[in-house]
Image 1 (cartoon, rainbow, N blue to C red):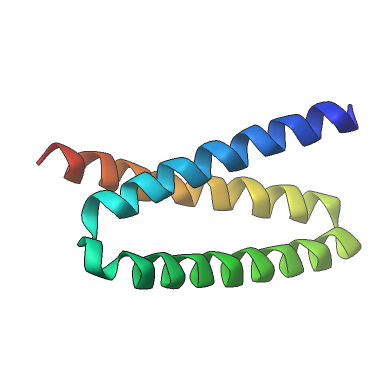
Image 2 (spheres, rainbow, N blue to C red):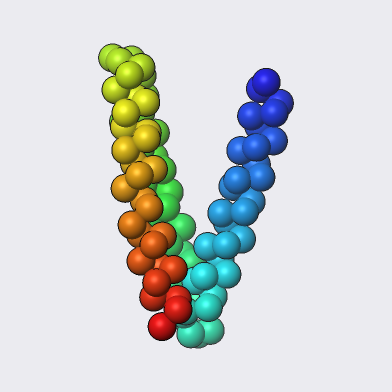
Length: 90
């Protein structure tokens, strides 16, 4: 199960990374891409760290709270994706 989980995590991270890189490349002028990628990756790393830290605290206190937080964050991301899809059409 651990190997399957690692494989799925790797596939998800690879897909996410390539899609986000393509998105940034498509909307940022070539001369500003290095700055855009640096800012994006910095923000992504900080958010990942803070989310992991909070999930670690929740894991210590309540597994149910951890599950609720995780599902809620996934659901909160949906409007962002829908907005991006809608603005892509225009």
